Image (cartoon, rainbow, N blue to C red):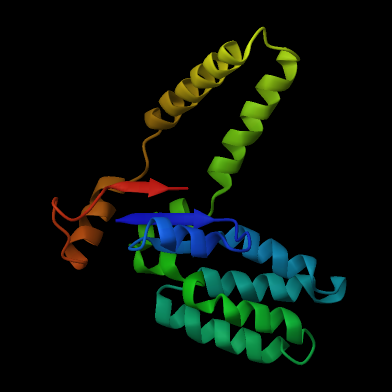
Length: 183
């Protein structure tokens, strides 16, 4: 199984389903919240931020969808375009809720990958110029290898337990599941 989190670029979902037809797709919840808050008036930001956080931190998918519908109904008269846009992504916005509660916060955003790109850019900027394309590729490879080793040393709290729980709930076996998460 592939679980893909994207920042919601237009057409991204179509490309992902074309390449990975059985993948679970999740738009980055952090990007969705930022997008919402960027399009509302300053006077409404605090209340909307509180309400949308309640939606995304609900205990299960059913509760999240109920809170989401309540939220969109409440604000549709003031922000009709924004609420209609949110309703169009509704089918994928709670995909992470299908996962066990303990690992949802690890996979509902692609900020880890964005942070990696920012670090690569920062490191490459100090080099100014590489001797050749091959030397630049080698430097990137070594940076990515270092970052990967650093990431692998992190112990994701109870990851094995929650992943096994998910496999059991969805009747996956070793033959039909891949244990990878793509950010």
